[in-house]
Amino acid sequence: MSEQILEVKHLSKNFGKNQVLKDIDFTVNKGDTISIIGASGSGKSTLLRCINLLETPTAGEIWYRGKNVADRKVKAHEYRSHVGMVFQSFNLFNNLTVLENCIVGQRKVLKKSKQEAKETAMYYLDKVGMAPYINARPRQLSGGQKQRVAIARALAMNPEVLLFDEPTSALDPEMVGEVLAVMQQLAQEGMTMLVVTHEMAFARDVSSRVVYMNDGVICEQGSPADVFGNPQKQETKDFLARFRNT
Image (cartoon, rainbow, N blue to C red; front, top):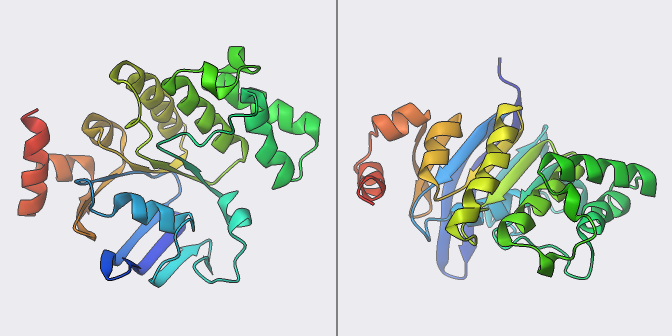
């Protein structure tokens, strides 16, 4: 029996009169790597931002470990220490070193000692291949290096789930591989991940489940073999055909 961590129920999000998400339902189980694919503007990133409480859902519920975190009484920063996020634009603190970027959240949110936070930060920076750069500032790093630091920073909070919002879309093509390699390793180690991505090979080869979104709804979801090999909906077939032809 799979252990359920997150459940999204009847989630909707409006920006003014524009309904971006429409009655979304899905679950995340421990150890899942779920890739969310779809055209730009289909609501993928908004869904992730709602799950991380960076956007307030217009309607619906988000259940984490039996608690509805869409309830306004929930302390978002505490919840985010369990459900971390890696952003498209890295969101590193430019005035801090690589090491300091990975320590600050542990100290402020998890209340760790300086030594313990440093040891944890070093462990994860080493894991993503960024230990030699601990004294560098973000401006001295390539895009791929910044994103690996961002992943280490998120991991240092010891989250149960990691959300990735198009983590390679701001990178030069030659740097995409180094970030995807880190994510693939995390998937193999059983990290629970929800990944919004345009990297179809990653979605096909690494995911345990693929969710195809179109126009604010989940159009189709299933195993990579089912979604890529035998899509049921015409919208899914049309979307995937564009990638096969590129």
